[in-house]
Image (tube, rainbow over all chains, first blue to last red; front, top):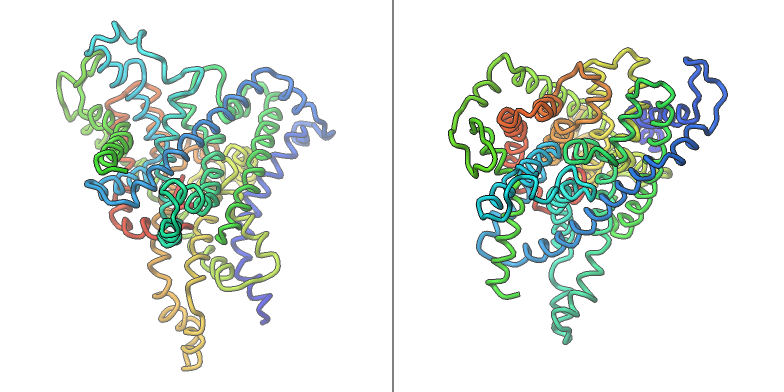
Length: 285
Length: 267
């Protein structure tokens, strides 16, 4: 057996599973988004579902909300993670505990974090109770709405809470692989601490940060259960809107759900390209 | 940065990381915890007792979730092992494309694929079954397993296998006595985190299981939506137990330098 056919044989099962489930699943979604559903007598593909989705104000508001959630969550989580990674490279009392908590958080499912965040920051949550005890508010209605709110603050808080540790661990892994030599060399050559960070360490960290941020952005943009628990009734985050349309009793809404899924997949593919570029530039697959 | 500033930053970080988990711990022991009480007037183990009783269905759900995550992990290991080996040990044309196909399910949001996946499994008669949910979970788990194993194999020296073969070992003997022991630590860690990826799935289970496969997150959402905060909190804490256990088993590895492992360790 040649090397080439042996490699093909080794890859075949995995490619079959992913081709059969993932690619076929995407393909089927694409067909249905063009309203091609022979079982329902629809055999003339058209773009009506896309027209309906793109002209509906509800969709654009949901798209805007999901982009806002993903952008804000990613930016805040990335900044804080960078600070946390730099902090964790130094020694300080309690370092072991912080690094344990970061790893613990990585294993907590999003839905658990979302429920915990709800009990913490909702208008009858722990913070509201503390505010009442401190005499800052008279009742729950006086506490700022941080969940089911138009700015999706609770959702963003949850993503920052959940993704900060994820980005921190990736940055720490990268930093560990780099060693401390480059920074020390820069300092020896007369760079200030800030210069050593901005001109040496930051550029070295950037590819890892970009790759991790692309993953976080994709997740915060496309996750369903977090906005389901913490999100407002309207506008809904895009994945919640798409799920609702797919389960609409009106069958005509279903191709629109498929069209939304395809648009979400398109944004996902752009992020995939960004991730692949960032990953290549740090020589990691 | 001065030491006191560093300590302050560390304390803030610690508080942020632990805060959302605290209300869950208190709620699970609360008996009627009304606004504006800062702590429940009465502590009780009622919620825990109910959660652990057969009537609540929590333990049954725990069993189904464990079964699904275990089966998904085993299938992913069997399928991912040869693929990981091919990616880790060989440079070949089309390798980049294969890596891209593996990264796509990890990055594309679940909502983009669930409708089509449900359509396929419906046609196969597997919608609403445990088997269908296991297949659906393979979509995020298999790529993760394969990419981690590719990283493991890239540090494996295949000449040891050739030496074993030269000394008369069959291919199976060479794999069992030479390759497997070398990759075992990586394989086990990948398996534990694959388990966790499947364990945390919500949308795929909801879409493919159609409400008939009640894994823990689905049950958890049901109680949360019904406003049973005490029960929800108890189930939530039961739900994070396997993660804690896996963390205890692997804590050393994930602080290490295996970026591939960390990259995938997200539900």
